[in-house]
Amino acid sequence: MIKNLATAFMALVFGFLGAAIWSYSGLADNRTRAFLLESPEILPEMAEAYRSQEAAKQLASVRDEVVAPFPGAVLGNPNGTRLLVEFTDYNCPYCEASLEDVTRLIAEDPELKVVVREWSIFDGSEIAARMALAAAMQGKYPEFHEAMFRLGPASPETVEAAARAAGLDLERAQADAASDAVSVELARNLSLAQQLGFSGTPAWVTGNTVIGGAVGFDALKEAVEEAGSEADYAAGA
Image (cartoon, rainbow, N blue to C red; front, side, top):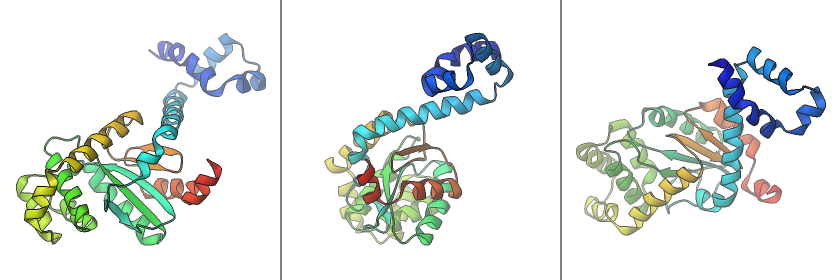
């Protein structure tokens, strides 16, 4: 199996690292193959690096859409100069666990704007995603977002309870949740997630970096800091 992996990743090695490795190391094909056979632990790392590189290329073509929030679907400072985008699902346990990381990031950085993209991929979660966007239309997205994770998993009963806890006009929210605007947003988020190659939630974008999974506070903080402000990104883009 290791031999097959080594062969499969040969193209990746040279495609990802290119001629620089060849000129630096002077490795011939057989020596490179032997190196991979002796160091199979680097193959997953290389595959992830390649995936991230390809996702960053895709991001360049859709970034404006990714960072533009559904009106009101923002945590932290709506006018913040630093940006983090999260693709999330209310029935995803890793998204629930990541809420603490996001809350801490916001508490430590008053310039952080978190754009949340509702991507309902778990069974039964679409009803919560729709109500979340309806809450955004009433200017109460953060309140619903926190309440839904606290009261979940998503069901008609917990969604209504979260809406009441957030102080929503329930009749208006139910109508907005079924609106074309919300349906279009959910379809857009699905399309963006697919274009970026995300395989699940949570998933993140900051600067030109694309991150998959519940990577934890430290990794998110480092990525946001490396991305800098949106002005810095625009200047370097």
